[in-house]
Length: 317
Image 1 (cartoon, rainbow, N blue to C red):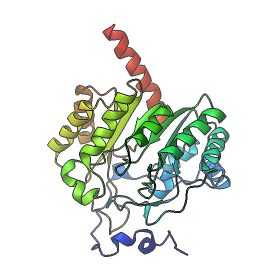
Image 2 (cartoon, rainbow, N blue to C red; image 1 turned 90 degrees about the vertical axis):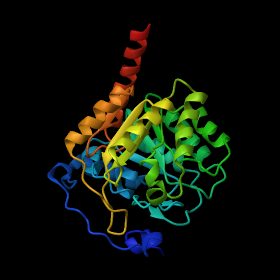
Image 3 (cartoon, helix red, strand yellow; image 1 turned 90 degrees about the horizontal axis):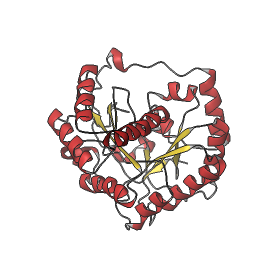
Image 4 (cartoon, rainbow, N blue to C red; image 1 turned 180 degrees about the vertical axis):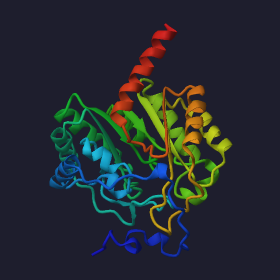
């Protein structure tokens, strides 16, 4: 039986990569270990429903804070990804068959946690003809049925090897926010995200708006991977050309010595400068801090995102 707690079995595609020296984390990137009663209560609900979260699988530094408030990002379609991105801590390999009962269990957990806003993401499933699009749609519908007042944000794969109808299936299920992360600048894709294509991901976000102009779109990048500032600014321009509403920028953290190395830790002042630049380019919402992640404070940010659109529409009326 494969032990996913063992890095050599969790990331077999990285076994031949040389280990790199890990930079010491600065004070602004440190977080406390999770110990609160709220954290444990959230963990127990997730365990009872046999659910996987990206919070744990990707080693998110904010898991203690988010779970203490009952917020967890559901990761559907298993815990094994068909891609081997060099930045990612999610296990790589051949996934198991889809669990037809998973959408119902996710919906039950969302109800039990009393979530006003939920983020649902997944591993890449290149083994499936539709990349898991119908499974996403079933999960959205199950949550809507069980918790009609809960707003839903999806963070999807790129559906790179799928027919165009895959994306249409997810959009037709009417999530409130459609998120797909570009992750990094295009020049680093061959090293950081070798199984993906930058302009395909960008086009995916653009197509969401073409299919449903009212749907909020969101994307994010990591910094500290070796990118230049100008390249990040160009990604912002590309996103705005695709009419992306919400941008997240966070510090990349290296999961193990065999993952892509941290080139440097970007300072809080630099993150503030990125936020100012992004707001100047027309994003409705920007979150740019060292600990920013796609689903960090997603519920509060969604409320602000909706308010920002209403204010912009009122100002243009």
